[in-house]
Image 1 (cartoon, helix red, strand yellow):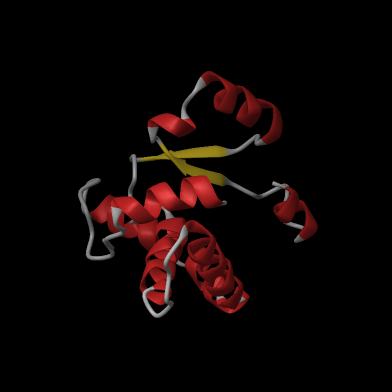
Image 2: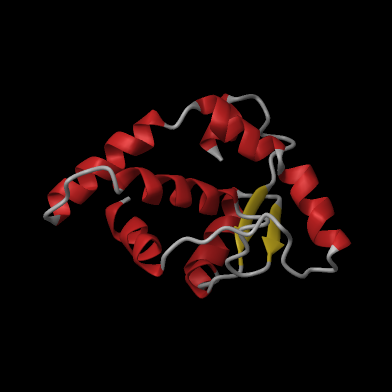
Length: 130
């Protein structure tokens, strides 16, 4: 929300989230009511509509090139690779939302050819490290 304001798009900003249970707790719903006037609900864990899944996949592939032997090494590798992700790449992901929405509508909510795989381990690590 703060980033949207800094970019000058606060009025038209839409907050996308999936319906994963950790995002639908009472405290999260309350925060969103007071802080995000436009929340768009998407299917739980849908990489079609959740661009962060693409970023997790990129990170997962890139950290395989690091020699990781403990949690500190892992955190350092993740941070290093996260910092290398260009703003152009993230902008392209955001700009892809229109085509993603159209693809999901064309598939009547079923998976599209945009599906990516992110290991459960990567999702768990992301929750604890960031």
